[in-house]
Image (cartoon, rainbow, N blue to C red):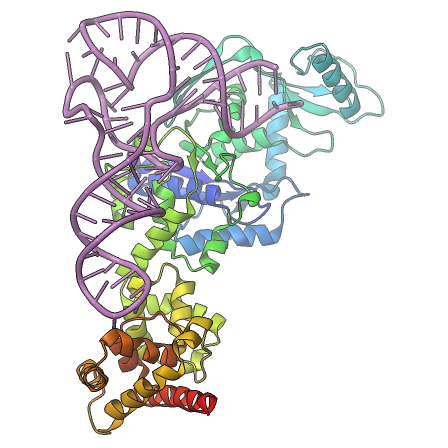
Length: 481
RNA sequence: GGUCCUAUCGUCUAGUGGCCUAGGACGUUGGCCUCUCACGCCGAAAACACGGGUUCGAACCCCGUUGGGACCA
């Protein structure tokens, strides 16, 4: 096979948001395709009508787009939307009847109630509950009942899967049940649809979560019965929450969109996800090009991995530090409104300066926006710590600062000038810079934490600096009197 | 319950029979730098689940036990 013939897919059920585990499965598929020069498709497995929603489809598409995971257009798709199984119901039925004609499927008239009671009996007697095949040789229908259609499984021998991740996995064919492929209401079942779709889409490598590993022998049986070539399989281990159970809603944030909302960059998410279960020597940080070049399924780990939000945060801080301020400006702008900064007051040039001063101090875009807000707002609020710094003892300092900073109205308002002025205050009052800087910081930012004080005043500008220091002088003077 | 997968610091992992007194990263922690907070730099603590084999030699190969996960119900 030419490497360019590689075709993979991500096939989520649209029953909720795009979660972390799904995103990683999509990512590994996408990286595999990109690294082999192959195709990556998206397929929506929405046959479970009761749980599938349009919102969930939108959320999956939205999440993948945010991550930058773009899928290829399947040749037989007539629209730009990804293929949905509900659009293919007719095809599944045709395939079911094909199997029936070949004698590899049969009509089953057992009712769910009958099946359930036999299952209970089996359990009570300590037997493994499975279908007993009683309808297999039935020659006449049961009047008044709609039959389901069962696959006549091969139950002798073994089924061996040479898994790209797990290695060789062997199943005894005797465990195989005659599974229902078409329900009595005419809807096809999961394992059957997957096989038909993967065949039609000419999927060469089925890369999915290892929760599907036990489904694989059934599907292989179906491939064989229908006379189709069997694709390669690669089963990825699960992502676990802090309690070592499969990551789910109980563990807090599991939707990728939630991480976007909390101020994570897609670059960081990708980098974190790819290192969860995959490694390349001791390297932690990878560009997209590096990933495509270096990704390989045989470096993917076999055991489940725990999701670690702390490491994600570290990787996020790494990207916040290293991305160009211009790009960061685009990324952080939407978050500023949370802190009362409307787009009309954001000056691009000032924003970029603010970002440079905050890149080494922010772990998320939300944190960055919070720290940046005071540079744009007209009115700021002082937090508790800032109020505690601004006592009546700081009044002479603020007065001296105002004197030294504004005695020469024509001076160039730059870093050097501000440093000189504050040094002068220190000498005048016999104080260290730390003692001078902190009250100013509190007065102009409303916080006790900020970038370097010279940068803060420089970026804030002469006018806002004066206004804010003056306001605190007035307030303190009043409270003293 | 049956079947399948799995087991290296708290976490993600390197390790493919001698390079291992087990390496890196996050986190934790001590220090340096310092106008606050960070960043950065230097250091520390911290792991081969257990028991049997195979071998001159095992984190690595085999078997079992225990633990964890998933699927089927």
